[in-house]
Amino acid sequence: MHDDPCPREPEVLRAVEEGRWPADLRAHAEACQACREVETVTAALREVVDAEAALPMPAAGDVWWRAAWQARREARARALRPLDTLERSEPLVAMVALVILLVARGDLVLHAAARWLSLDGGGQALAAVLPAAVLPFLLIGLGLGGVVILVGLGAVVAND
Picture 1 (cartoon, rainbow, N blue to C red):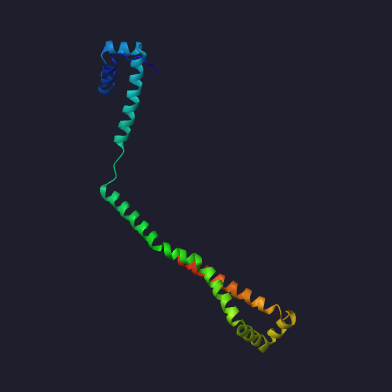
Picture 2 (spheres, rainbow, N blue to C red):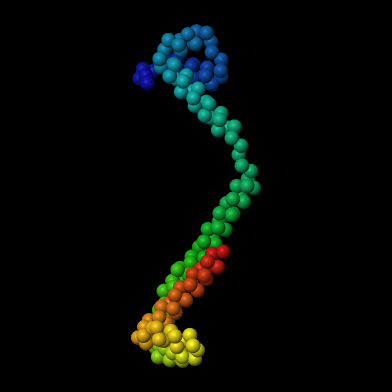
Protein backbone atom coordinates (compact mmCIF):
# COMPACT_ATOMS: atom_id res chain seq x y z
CA MET A 1 0.00 0.00 0.00
CA HIS A 2 1.22 3.44 -0.90
CA ASP A 3 0.71 6.37 1.50
CA ASP A 4 1.46 9.27 -0.87
CA PRO A 5 -1.61 10.33 -2.85
CA CYS A 6 -1.22 11.14 -6.51
CA PRO A 7 -3.08 14.13 -8.01
CA ARG A 8 -4.10 11.95 -11.00
CA GLU A 9 -5.90 9.28 -8.91
CA PRO A 10 -9.38 10.67 -9.76
CA GLU A 11 -8.52 10.45 -13.46
CA VAL A 12 -7.40 6.81 -13.05
CA LEU A 13 -10.59 6.04 -11.14
CA ARG A 14 -12.71 7.56 -13.91
CA ALA A 15 -10.71 5.69 -16.59
CA VAL A 16 -11.27 2.35 -14.84
CA GLU A 17 -15.00 3.08 -14.47
CA GLU A 18 -15.44 4.11 -18.10
CA GLY A 19 -12.99 1.61 -19.53
CA ARG A 20 -11.26 4.29 -21.67
CA TRP A 21 -7.64 5.05 -21.00
CA PRO A 22 -5.86 7.98 -22.63
CA ALA A 23 -2.31 7.03 -23.64
CA ASP A 24 -0.64 9.52 -21.31
CA LEU A 25 -2.76 8.34 -18.33
CA ARG A 26 -1.94 4.68 -19.07
CA ALA A 27 1.79 5.54 -19.13
CA HIS A 28 1.42 7.47 -15.88
CA ALA A 29 -0.51 4.59 -14.17
CA GLU A 30 2.22 2.13 -15.12
CA ALA A 31 4.85 4.38 -13.58
CA CYS A 32 2.93 5.56 -10.47
CA GLN A 33 2.45 3.02 -7.66
CA ALA A 34 -0.49 4.89 -6.08
CA CYS A 35 -2.35 4.96 -9.40
CA ARG A 36 -1.67 1.24 -9.97
CA GLU A 37 -3.21 0.51 -6.57
CA VAL A 38 -6.24 2.65 -7.40
CA GLU A 39 -6.62 0.79 -10.68
CA THR A 40 -6.32 -2.65 -9.05
CA VAL A 41 -8.74 -1.92 -6.21
CA THR A 42 -11.28 -0.19 -8.44
CA ALA A 43 -11.21 -3.01 -10.98
CA ALA A 44 -11.70 -5.61 -8.22
CA LEU A 45 -14.59 -3.69 -6.69
CA ARG A 46 -16.18 -3.22 -10.13
CA GLU A 47 -16.05 -7.01 -10.70
CA VAL A 48 -17.77 -7.64 -7.36
CA VAL A 49 -20.49 -5.07 -8.05
CA ASP A 50 -21.09 -6.46 -11.53
CA ALA A 51 -21.27 -10.01 -10.20
CA GLU A 52 -23.83 -9.01 -7.55
CA ALA A 53 -25.92 -7.20 -10.14
CA ALA A 54 -26.00 -10.37 -12.24
CA LEU A 55 -27.61 -12.41 -9.44
CA PRO A 56 -31.34 -12.80 -10.00
CA MET A 57 -33.62 -11.33 -7.38
CA PRO A 58 -36.29 -13.68 -6.04
CA ALA A 59 -39.85 -12.88 -6.93
CA ALA A 60 -41.82 -10.93 -4.35
CA GLY A 61 -44.37 -13.72 -4.11
CA ASP A 62 -41.65 -16.24 -3.26
CA VAL A 63 -40.23 -13.97 -0.55
CA TRP A 64 -43.73 -13.44 0.90
CA TRP A 65 -44.50 -17.17 0.80
CA ARG A 66 -41.26 -18.05 2.62
CA ALA A 67 -41.88 -15.39 5.27
CA ALA A 68 -45.47 -16.59 5.81
CA TRP A 69 -44.31 -20.20 5.99
CA GLN A 70 -41.64 -19.30 8.55
CA ALA A 71 -44.18 -17.34 10.62
CA ARG A 72 -46.60 -20.30 10.60
CA ARG A 73 -43.81 -22.65 11.63
CA GLU A 74 -42.77 -20.41 14.53
CA ALA A 75 -46.41 -19.96 15.64
CA ARG A 76 -46.92 -23.73 15.58
CA ALA A 77 -43.77 -24.27 17.65
CA ARG A 78 -44.95 -21.68 20.21
CA ALA A 79 -48.39 -23.28 20.38
CA LEU A 80 -46.99 -26.79 20.86
CA ARG A 81 -44.44 -25.82 23.51
CA PRO A 82 -46.80 -26.57 26.48
CA LEU A 83 -47.73 -29.92 24.94
CA ASP A 84 -44.07 -30.80 24.48
CA THR A 85 -43.43 -30.00 28.14
CA LEU A 86 -46.37 -32.15 29.17
CA GLU A 87 -45.17 -34.98 26.94
CA ARG A 88 -41.76 -34.91 28.60
CA SER A 89 -43.32 -35.09 32.07
CA GLU A 90 -45.68 -38.00 31.28
CA PRO A 91 -43.32 -40.81 32.41
CA LEU A 92 -42.68 -39.16 35.76
CA VAL A 93 -46.39 -38.53 36.36
CA ALA A 94 -47.27 -42.11 35.38
CA MET A 95 -44.64 -43.59 37.69
CA VAL A 96 -45.73 -41.39 40.61
CA ALA A 97 -49.37 -42.40 40.00
CA LEU A 98 -48.41 -46.08 39.96
CA VAL A 99 -46.43 -45.78 43.19
CA ILE A 100 -49.34 -43.93 44.85
CA LEU A 101 -51.75 -46.63 43.66
CA LEU A 102 -49.51 -49.38 44.99
CA VAL A 103 -49.01 -47.63 48.33
CA ALA A 104 -52.73 -46.87 48.77
CA ARG A 105 -54.18 -50.11 47.38
CA GLY A 106 -51.17 -52.40 47.08
CA ASP A 107 -52.77 -55.06 49.25
CA LEU A 108 -55.68 -55.41 46.81
CA VAL A 109 -53.34 -55.60 43.84
CA LEU A 110 -51.19 -58.26 45.52
CA HIS A 111 -54.22 -60.35 46.54
CA ALA A 112 -55.64 -60.14 43.00
CA ALA A 113 -52.27 -61.16 41.53
CA ALA A 114 -51.91 -64.05 44.00
CA ARG A 115 -55.43 -65.24 43.21
CA TRP A 116 -54.69 -65.06 39.49
CA LEU A 117 -51.42 -66.97 39.92
CA SER A 118 -53.10 -69.73 41.94
CA LEU A 119 -55.89 -70.33 39.40
CA ASP A 120 -53.81 -72.06 36.75
CA GLY A 121 -50.94 -74.54 36.63
CA GLY A 122 -48.50 -71.88 35.40
CA GLY A 123 -49.20 -69.79 38.45
CA GLN A 124 -48.39 -72.67 40.78
CA ALA A 125 -45.13 -73.30 38.93
CA LEU A 126 -44.22 -69.60 39.18
CA ALA A 127 -45.06 -69.60 42.91
CA ALA A 128 -42.80 -72.62 43.38
CA VAL A 129 -39.88 -70.90 41.63
CA LEU A 130 -40.30 -67.42 43.09
CA PRO A 131 -40.45 -66.81 46.81
CA ALA A 132 -43.51 -64.92 48.02
CA ALA A 133 -41.39 -61.92 49.06
CA VAL A 134 -40.23 -61.35 45.46
CA LEU A 135 -43.74 -61.19 44.01
CA PRO A 136 -44.50 -57.55 45.02
CA PHE A 137 -41.23 -56.32 43.50
CA LEU A 138 -41.90 -58.31 40.35
CA LEU A 139 -45.37 -56.81 40.01
CA ILE A 140 -44.10 -53.27 40.63
CA GLY A 141 -41.36 -53.76 38.05
CA LEU A 142 -43.82 -55.12 35.51
CA GLY A 143 -46.21 -52.24 36.17
CA LEU A 144 -43.52 -49.58 35.83
CA GLY A 145 -42.14 -51.24 32.72
CA GLY A 146 -45.61 -51.32 31.19
CA VAL A 147 -46.13 -47.64 31.97
CA VAL A 148 -42.78 -46.71 30.42
CA ILE A 149 -43.57 -48.73 27.29
CA LEU A 150 -47.01 -47.15 26.94
CA VAL A 151 -45.65 -43.64 27.43
CA GLY A 152 -42.87 -44.31 24.91
CA LEU A 153 -45.34 -45.60 22.35
CA GLY A 154 -47.51 -42.54 22.96
CA ALA A 155 -44.52 -40.26 22.34
CA VAL A 156 -43.66 -42.11 19.12
CA VAL A 157 -47.23 -41.86 17.85
CA ALA A 158 -47.45 -38.17 18.85
CA ASN A 159 -44.28 -37.32 16.90
CA ASP A 160 -45.59 -38.85 13.69
